[in-house]
Amino acid sequence: MTGKNQKPNSLDARYAAFDILQRVEQGGYADRLLDHYLQRHPTMDLRERGLLTELVYGSLRLRGRLDFALALFSRQKLQRLEPGALRLLQLGAYQLLELDRIPSHAAVHATVELAHQLGLGRVAGLINGTLRTLERERATIAWPTPDNLRAYLLHVCSLPNWLAKELLRQFPNTESQALAEALTEAAPLTLRTNTLKTDRETLLAALAEAGHSARACRYVAEGIIVEKRAAQPLPGDQDGWYQVQDQASMLIAHLLAAQPGDKVLDACAAPGGKTTHIAALAGNQAQILALDKHPRRVELIHQGAARIGCQGIEAQCWDLTEKPDFLEPESFDRILVDAPCSGLGVLRRNPESRWSRQPSDIKALAELQQTILGQVAPLLRSGGHLLYSVCTFTTAETDAVVEAFLTTHPDFVQEDFRTLLPAEWLPLTTDTGSVRTLPHHHDGMDAFFVTKFIKK
View 1 (cartoon, rainbow, N blue to C red):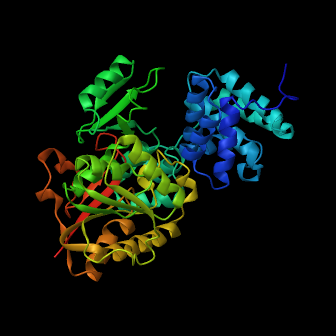
View 2: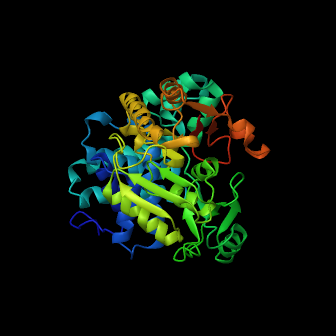
View 3: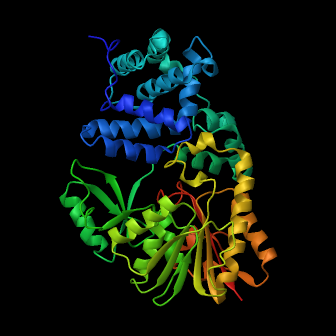
C-alpha cells in the first residue's frame, strides 16, 4: 500500500526532519526545534529519534555537498525547485551518500512516499528519478579534491562561498582544509561533571555501568566525552550530576578564575552553563549577577542553577546595548563577557548558521561586542579581571575587538595567558597571549577565542 492517500506519521523520523527543516528555513533554530519536537512526541521510537537527529543536523551541515551531487542528476536546476521538493531531495541524498545502514532502495522509496503524503505528488516523479540516478551513479561523481581547495571547501566541506573565502584569508591552506573538514563532522557529546554533587571518576563509572562508552577530556578536569551512547539514559540526569557543555565552553570559568567571596558579573549569561560552572568552581561562595536581554532565556538560568544546585546566582533581564544604570561603578571583582557572535566555531552544533549568516553580520556583531565591553568596563574595580570570549574565529570578532577595546580604554591592559596557564594548556594559547581552540587540534572541542583584560 502506498502513502499517496495517507497523512504523514508524526513519529516517522523522515517526516519530522522535513518539518523541522522547513521551520529552520523560516528562521528557526535546529537545536531548539529538535528538542521541542522530541518533547512533544515522547513515544517516538529510540531508533527513530536517533535517525531524526542525524537527518536534521547532517543535512544542514552537508547541504553544500548534497546540492553538488543532486545538481549533477536533477533534470531541473535546484534553484528553480519549490522548497519542499528540494528539502526532500536533500534528505534522500543524505541517506544515500552518508548513511550506510539504510538500504538505498528504502531511502528512495520512503522519500517518494513522503512526497505524496505531504501533498507534493506533482514532484514525486522528479524526486524518484533524481534519487534513483544518484543511487546508480554516485560512484562516478567527480568530487573536487584539495588541489582545487576553494571548490573542495564549497562542495565537499559544504561551506558557503563567503565563509570559504574567510578561511582561506585567515588560515594557511592546510589549516583551512583541516578546520573545514572538522566542521563537517558531528559534534561530540561532552558533559561537565557537576562537582557540587559528584566527581568525574564516579560519573565515568556510572556511565560505564549503564553501557555508555566515555572518556575523560584532555584539558578540563571535569569534562567527559561520551563516545558511544547505549539505549539506557545517561545516569544522574535527574540528580544534576552533569551539564551538557563543550570542553571549550568549560575553559571559560577556569580562565575567569573567580574566587570565593568574589562579586562576579556574567554579562551575556543565558542559557547559564558558564554561570553555573563559575559558581561550582567557587564552591558556591561567589556572588554572581547573570544578565541576558531575553526574559525567557533568563528563566533558563534560574532552571539550570536549581538543577545543578548552585547558590549565589541572581539572574536579571537587561540589554547591555543600554547603560546598566542600576549597577554601581567599580562594584565587580570579575566580569565575563561571553559575547553574542557569528557562532562559526560551533557550526557543528548550529549548522543552520552556515546558510543564515552573511558577511555583513560579522561587522555588526563586532560593533555589538565592542559596545557591550564598553558598557561593562566601568563596573569593574581597579585590579579586577574582565574576560572576553566568543565561539568564533573571525579576525573582526577576536583580535580586532581586543585592539579596539585597548585603544578606547587605556585603563585596561591585556593579560598574557602564557604566563598563567599550566604547561598542558599552553598549546591552546596564541602568540598574543590569548586562548584559541580549534576542533582539529584540541581534543575535538569547539572553536573559541578568549582573552583577559586587567583594570589598572
